[in-house]
Image (cartoon, helix red, strand yellow):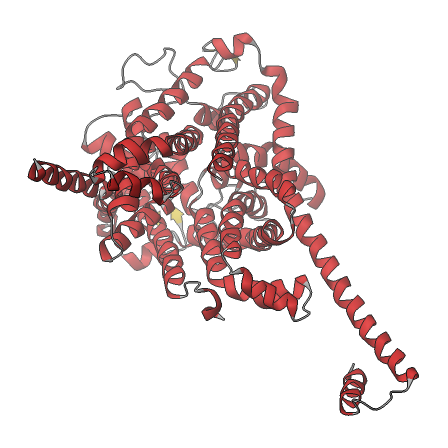
Length: 317
Length: 297
């Protein structure tokens, strides 16, 4: 290596003078060897990076594969439409499906207006400064609060302090608090994607700021906001820890009649069957089946949101 | 007329401002209620004994409320999971941002997002019924539900966070820097190592911290997969009982507003403080070492 460098400098010093052909070929060889080595390092590393990306895909694929392989046989019409029977070793999971749907929808109905309004303030009204920084810090920290702490909060605040009891409404409120940062984030992204020229044109025509937001910005960003809502909904539907103390119970024979009823939910049902059921091995296929239904629900919503979002992005470009 | 419009404007702005405060209000309420239900335990046991006591036997008589083994469990599970998650997450991010063709990226990115969307209970279930027996066979250990297994499962929960945030950071490196390096004869890898990574290191650090924060607070995976033994782990194949698992597993049995109940809320406080610190550090790094294009090099 050093020799190469010396030869290089020699060559530079002797610029203009004829150089011996033999010398050139030595330099060329050394340079080429070095170049090959650098390329080789690059190729090895890039293959590793590609491998890392493949591992992620593989992980997702393997999980879904095992759920499909072992759970598909459990999925029958009866499984989807019947209540659990014989201490949950037979029958279906209808109350869990209904419970999860109600929890997710309830959470989103509460969180969406608050989240969208927060995002509107952050993106349209707020000026950079201490207040904005504080609110953002609050949202980021809320997003980082562990799900089980949300559960504790729901238990202490909604269930005990506000005397709502272990009920659908306590669960919805807890999940709404949890999905709020998700919705704020995606709504902000949607609002940012609306070109400023839209706002300027509206303001230039004499509309006030609120009229501009209501008539121009919101309609233009609506698909993006709804995508975010779907993502928030799927997040809320898949959570277990926040509803363990606030809404879900091992077993209720009936579908919920009011918002103050206890409910069953898919994630909690999987947990209960897999860890505390009367016969864990015998209900294995029911566990797989329930997990499969949950995955189908959550991933289905996510895929729809992803596809929808990429179509919006293409349109905006 | 004009005045009416203007006052309506002011009113709308106030309304939006107060709604935007909701997140802070919720965060504040969480703190208030955690402390309200958790602090009474410190009338029974001192803060030092609670944090550093080696025995967690909340139901024996007299009960022991020492959460040191649980803290060690949480920290070791998170540390081990980041050993898997950081390289995988950052390498995937580099691949997506710098190497992958647009078409490949359009397939890989949603895959990572879907991985993030998998409910934690499903990952926990997968760890229990598929990975645990596998580990038991391969390593010939008494139980597959242990520190290693839960760290592995947690890694796949924090990879998406690390990957997507790192990717954003790498993307936002100004193309001028990259082109300059390539024009000087550096290979693509040298450009990535010497130019792009240093320029985006603050964003990547933020991503890593947030990923670890997600891992330390994750509940269902450690509840189902970590094994549940409240002891200081001796090896990576020891069963452990991290903080969130204790809360989730014991809350149902704890008598309402008894000492055990208070102790579980106090664990919640510890967990909350942990994640709050992680987030504040991430926020600090993101603002202090903000990427400012060429000037940051």
